Amino acid sequence: MNTPIGITKALAIWAAETPVITSELAIHRASEVIYDIMGCTIAGCEDAGVRTLKEVALQQESGRATVFGAQKKLSAPWAALVNGMSAHALDYDDNFLPGLTHASAVLFPALLALGEEEHASGKDLIDALIIGLEVQSVVGRGVNRNHNNAGWHSTSTVGVIGAAAACGRLLKLSSAQMVNAMSLAVSMASGPKIQFGTMAKPFHAGMAAKNGILAARFAQAGMEGSDCALEGAMGFRDLYAGNNAQGWEPLIAHIGQPLAIEEFGFSLKLYPCCGSSHKVVDNVIALKEQYAFNAQDVEKVETLVEYVNQQNLMYSAPISEMEARFSMNYCVAVALMAGQLQLSDFTQSAIERPEIRALFPLVSMEAYPQHACDKDPTKRLPHSVKITLKNGDVYERASQWAKGTIHNPMSERELAEKFKHCCQHVLPEETMVALQQMLANVMNIEDIRDMSLHLDVMHTHR
Image (tube, rainbow, N blue to C red; front, side):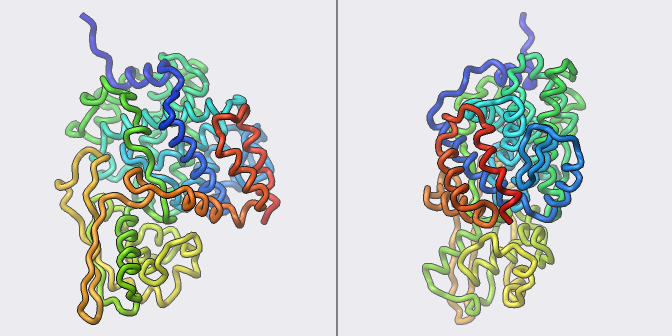
């Protein structure tokens, strides 16, 4: 009688041996998220925290992988560390519901850097990204929401395991080596949510990207780890989520059927701030447009979000741009005043605007009880807003899916405008246009170093 294999082996075998992904929908969505995260990484490369990290990273020996915003190239792990932090620095990068992760901020920097060393093609990049995303999905659904509610930053913890699998796919690891890569990544999984609103939060994404490469390289060289690191006693689920977490029994027989990228897609972001505020911000902007009131007309704004979203939005009176990205009060205040949120709203001078800060006390936030939220992280409750005006008028609106999800997608025009806003102060326009054209045909890129060439001018365009 054959003993059933555990999720660590099952995922590793699937990640190593499944045929090259040819699904048109999967390839389209992977190409779209690469386009989006490229813009986010370009925009974030001059963030203050990234500059600090870069000062240290650029002291390392030269390598073959591009560092966004720097002339010097580094080894893949160090480049991925910097670029991963850049990708997540402005919180403009996608959310991935099954993993409760910012998936592409970990996967793309890791694969781009490793791919430059390996002369990977665009097709290789997309295939590996889809594989890594699937691993993030399965791992995340097995431990969340317990894991995330306990205070773990899934982008870093779940993300590093997916990144190890993605990098292993790019390196063409065997299934046995893939087990070891994922197992070693479990030992590297870290990152608490106490760091939200600080430079350390986007550092988590870079750390996961770097460690994903290292885990795959170590496994390639012969380093071994437990073959049940996810499900075994004192393993990932046991320590990071508890034995009452959902687990992988319902998922193990259906890995990749359908692919997570097909079933759930990505939640791309219209606003450069924590996604926990986005449904409320959508509602505020929609009500403002529909009823044509001004911020000065508002007496109070009452919001209702899910339990974990209230946890994430921990700053009611932010004093820095990082804190503002995790403040319902700030995001609603700007939406009331301007009818939009954009990159220029998250600077120190913007945070200090007295007319914005005067609106903070008007905004309150309540949450559904923790038990009301489905254990499956892909299931979501509506977020609502109730705006009471000084004249007594009351307007209410609720939405289950934020703009940018597959249920409420951004248009091609909105994606192009976002990319332009991300690049306009960093890249010359002709370079931006050339990069856009290349990103529109990622599958046809023979060597992704050709894509990276467009980034070499970033360090001179200030």
